[in-house]
Length: 101
Image 1 (cartoon, rainbow, N blue to C red):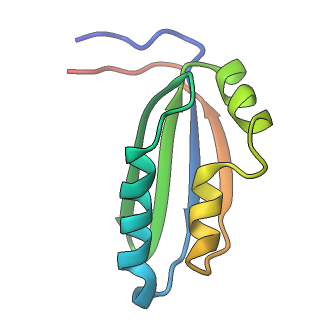
Image 2 (cartoon, rainbow, N blue to C red; image 1 turned 90 degrees about the vertical axis):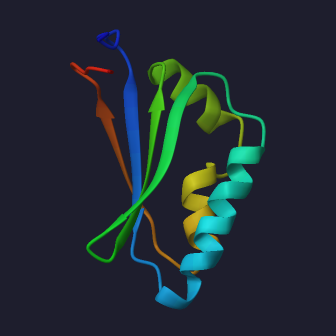
């Protein structure tokens, strides 16, 4: 078990997506995984539950997140949700403690 160093940041972009667009969302996320990753991106995942989709991304720190946001007109996760007609909401959280097994 290892603890994450302090300073990591988790972004969560969530949206309700019309069921007819679910496959397009998953395919779009898989296409993003094949692209080069921004520096500082540690992990990203597409989640679904209770009728809502979420993309959670773990960043090395706020500086890495800020660098990614300044290098593009629109970050990938909100852009992906918009491409399937959804209206994404963003939450940014600091990781205070964690455990990996």
